[in-house]
Image (cartoon, rainbow, N blue to C red):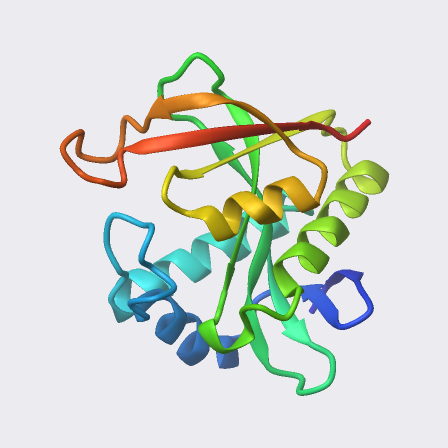
Length: 177
């Protein structure tokens, strides 16, 4: 198992088979998935986790599994992935995060994202990252602001139904080198 980076309270590492139940529960949680078009069922979560691990193995960065040091439990993920849908700002590398609901409001998303940015600056060729979320997702926007990102505009997400309240998105940007 590769550990990519550590923060004061977190370990960013490879995914392990024992992460799957918590990973699946997170992806099926109504609150966690509120700003996504749909929740992931168990089969979709398994495929998603396997894909994330393949990308980590191939690239040495991606969406890292997050382990809480104190409990040694999987609590979510953070890191980078390619935003490749058709838009004026793509293709681009997005920084993102998803945490189990019981770990919200403890500063973990910000801590993990800052750790991921430090890792990217030191260990990758990434020069800049973007982040985007549904306009209504104020908690994620606050994390974007806390990690130093600046508002770069708004757009209609092409992979979300245009009549969905989740179609309206905001875009943030950060130079990391």
